Image 1 (cartoon, rainbow, N blue to C red):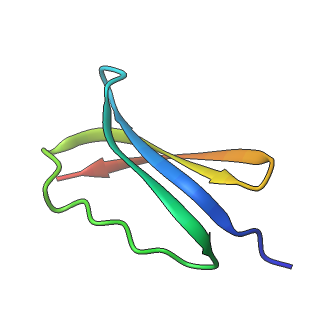
Image 2: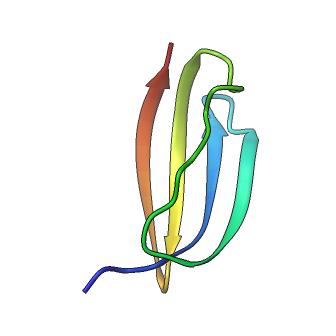
Length: 59
């Protein structure tokens, strides 16, 4: 069974929140990163009672 995403946030390397969105029980979401500056980020996905974090590089 897939966990549904409740919210996500993107944090830059300086620890600043650069994006934050609430999602209504989505099995899949599309996150636009085209407006982010080049750099290293952490994407936090909030799922039911868990948080999953993923690092990514935009260049």
